[in-house]
Amino acid sequence: MSARDKAAFASLPSVDRVLRAAWAAPLIADRGRPQVTDAIRAVLVELRANGGAATLATAIDDSILRVRVTERLEAMTQPSPRPVFNLTGTVVHTNLGRSRLAESAAAVMAVAATRPSNLEFDLAEGVRGDRDGHVEALVCRLTGAEASTVVNNNAAAVLLVLNTLAQGREVPTSRGELIEIGGSFRMPEIMASAGCRLREIGTTNRVHLEDYDAAIGGETGVVMKVHTSNYAIVGFTSSVAEADIAKLCRTRGVPFVIDLGSGSLVDLVRYGLPHEPMPSEALAHGADLVTFSGDKLLGGPQAGIIVGRADLIKQVKRNPMKRALRVDKTTIAALSSTLALYEDPDRLPERLPVLRELLRPAAEVRAAAHRLRDGVAAAVQGVATVEVVDCESQIGSGALPTQTIASAGLAIRPVTDRGAGSVLNRIARAFRDLPVPVIGRTHEGALVFDFRCLDDEAAFAAQLSKLDISRAG
Image 1: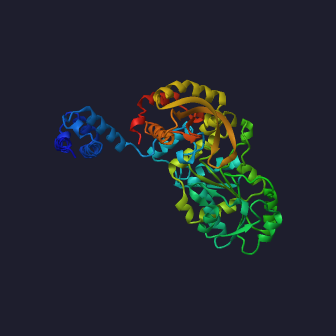
Image 2: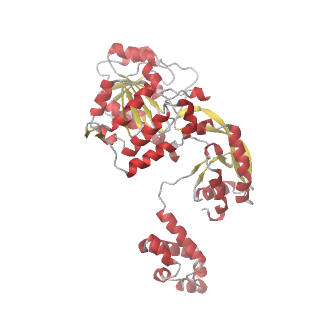
Image 3: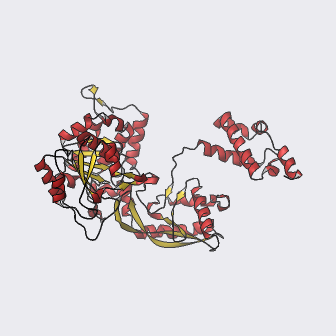
């Protein structure tokens, strides 16, 4: 270290001296002395490491220090789950919170969170109630089920059903349906955790009714069919119709369970989208129990919904594990509000965000890309070029994996091929560092922003002036 650098470091203000600066007083009044102290200490350490000592040694009122401390305080006090712009092209993105709630659902969720409610209290009788009662009638009306119950996600729903009906027993399932879902959770492992023994039948690409018949015996707890929602097997394939499996299970006296994964409460074909299997169809085909998610195509909060025969639902609800997997008051409130929207399917697209995003016309998305192109280009000027491109959105979270939706967006490409990968990473990081982080995807040497899910152009454009690629690490 040079003598000049040593002198600069020696003359750096102490934390206590900075705390006495005039600009620190309002921060202390607003955030408290401990937080401001931690922020100042962290900024001084950071600036020393980055060679900023000489700049700060001259005056503790330096704007650099004041701005950095304020920024650090904002970062320290900001909730960790933050709003982001989902421009990935995946509408129901698991890593970005899956489906957005309808405004009506968010409103009742906030009320449930801030006020006492009759979550488990029967107002008519004045006695303890059942939290499932707030949604059961709606779920049954929409699916045709005799009864239903709700847990915290669909994996939990499958776990609870299997543990209740097949603990210590076999569960015949087609080899082609042993799915792996996000985070490397696999159906065989869920079965093992439920205390069941998986009995694989058929082959990866073909299974026949005779395979099910041969597998059912004295050790069978349930027969299970799993909707392969996140992949498709094509070519030389065969499967068995749900109605045929149901008839066989009734003859052999074992329950038939279908895990739909996503599941939809309305036929998407009526809106011009591909068909996704519905719980009502599975029950009509003879399934005894059906499980599906509340936060994917349904568009509600994270939940796992179990529907079907009243006697089996009763057994499921008596399982002690049910209490460990139950949902809270805010989930019940949001789910109830979301389900109510389905009773008016004609107005569902305008009220349910996930459906509104899926149905947004490509021309409308492309127009948004053209409007925003110049602003983004100005923000990355000299570093990258920006062009409007056509792209394909996907539904995501395991729904209709082979189907895409025509969309449009922006492709941001480094101006030079030299070190293009590193530059692209810095650009992507700079967009993630914005006050409302922007999340896109990299594709063929470009950072692509798909605007299908962009619901606030003004907010997106307003923060582009804060983009700082030079500080992105």
